[in-house]
Length: 76
Image 1 (cartoon, rainbow, N blue to C red):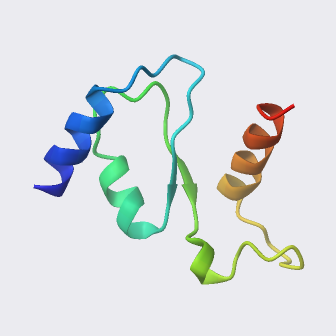
Image 2 (cartoon, helix red, strand yellow; image 1 turned 120 degrees about the vertical axis):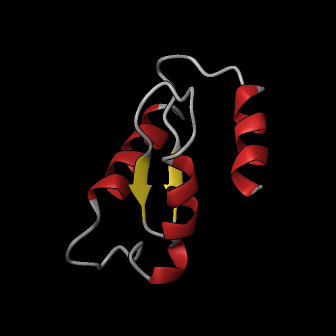
């Protein structure tokens, strides 16, 4: 039921090839991976509540670094 509702909302979006979907947390990632019609593979980003977004974190997850880079590139 949740997946069907999410798929309907994604189908209504105008996503182009440059669009990137960032799913935070395992629950969200599980559903986003099952969606059809996304222009590229979703980035796996840990949920902010997992304390992995802290700037002093030794191992910053790759998906989080990529999401930060994409956000910075598109806000200039």
